[in-house]
Image (cartoon, rainbow, N blue to C red; front, side, top):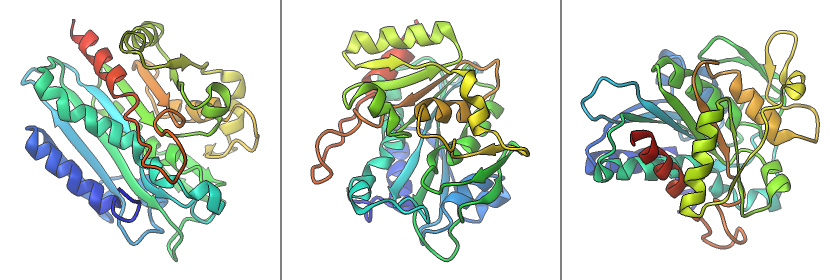
Length: 304
């Protein structure tokens, strides 16, 4: 679908249809409801669009009281870069920026059929990153759900900001594991090319299990380090900044930024699959579904 068709309203309708079709519970917060329900970062980053930002929760419940696995999908239905405007060439393929959310929605749709024994909750921060009178300005400082402040130096680094609220919500659900999936940085392509997805983890056991699951289904992933030596690049005097003000290690600094919103004791896997989720030029319908098989295989392994 084009970016015009697959706007936040369109994605919400698709998610509702899938939830109803596959016996999943769905809750949607829209527009000003995001402020009422304390998702200020998602609201701020989507404020430039005529389509209100959304936060969607989809639950697959087995009836057990076991701690859930949380899947988080970055959902930018189209990314102009906001006031930090992309070039026309860079913008041409930005309907691709919904691929993280689309991947997680696809995974949620098959859990009932697979009979997965684990409870799973999918979280979807959904925005269109556009230019408008209410657009966030570079240099603005915004609050997040967890109370941390983010200075938005570049509005084209919007994905990590909306994921901040979603990851905070994920930790509130007392999960056994969090996986977030996104098309987050071009430097994951610089590091690994267009055929290999990057992932990061704060847990050696889960990282190893994910690598084995991906290998078993033939999807190419490579683990990159959560190197704390670069953490100072995301810090300000009063909180965090969404742009490291450095041109190197940006896939790592993005992961370090997200880690600030994950409880240290919670196993977490961050997937940055900007390259392999799309194949070919912007002129093609190139979405590949990369990552669906690996994450499902991993989830089935959690049950075994």
